[in-house]
Length: 102
Image (cartoon, rainbow, N blue to C red):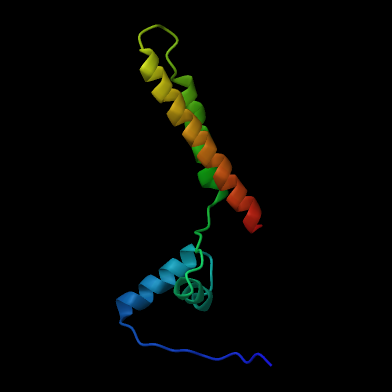
């Protein structure tokens, strides 16, 4: 039979508050957060859909700023598109995290 055992430890108020805040940000119970942290398991923060939509919006705004004239060098245009692609890739990755957590 697998019995559930209890472990306790003492800490000051600052450490206690930091643990509670990190657990809340990761959308985990305090005990689950401590288990994951001590057993070297991944702790993922929760991403809200609003952040994803804001990243997409920023990507679209950057796309509209692309120079239509010949004032930018080819290297500047490459850097611009690299940033644009990174923003879109980040938004897609965050959407995947949100979909996985539902």
